[in-house]
Image (tube, rainbow over the protein chains, first blue to last red):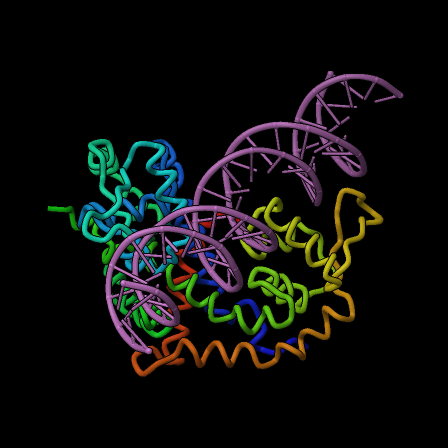
Length: 148
Length: 148
DNA sequence: TATATTTGCATCGTGAACGATATAAATAAA
DNA sequence: TTTATTTATATCGTTCACGATGCAAATATA
């Protein structure tokens, strides 16, 4: 008999992994319509909050490494959503700035959060449960993401 | 000013995505030591519960597509953890069966669940909170993963 | 000032994810 | 029994993730 700790139904990570993938899939049709992927959408969220940030700050905000973010930003630049320019004071830094088109996406994607929310909520999982869930996930993230 | 729905701190999906990635990273050193990745570890969990399953059943259990699972199984076969044989009754099916080495990993990885659990738990996120969290995530998965 | 170290970003290789498509076996319909 | 459809898996192309490594600019040290 398999040990309890090895049962798939007792795995926190598998649940997080699956829920994350399925929720990302829910974003897919809404984002691909505008030529975006989910990680690219996250970059937009970061830049909409605060424009003109260096690669490092964007990566840290998303708990990602720069070697993940750099090619992602290069693709977004090629698509015309942002521009990357060397920092004047410190030439090592690559400053990422939204283009007009990148800012316009904020209006075009205005309906996305609600649409995805509607797709995930049900009788047993309601919006009122979100704060508690956020707190729990944040605890896990802080514990594991420590340095960031 | 950015809309509340667009703030990164109000994103459920980003939290799931981050928590999933960070928890998977916690598995990494423990698994790579044995030549395994996290998705490969999930395949082992499935096969330890029930050996000799077709690709389709493994994929459904993990909420993945077969085009994700097939190459993953091919790599695991090359590593000697399992064998893939065509079904006798239905030759379309590829039956996946653990090797002795694949079964032995169950003992070698015996300490992994506890080690990862210790890495994720803290004062504010305790093992007692797991059942509630499981329920919430399962609701999301069922709502979004519907058919599977 | 010359040298060493640190910092910020980029490149490379591998392994997922996943949409789209292909292929062959099994089953259903004509 | 041909022919059409469904089913199970595999292949292909693109985009992440991420460990390892490289490189140039900035900073610290000698």
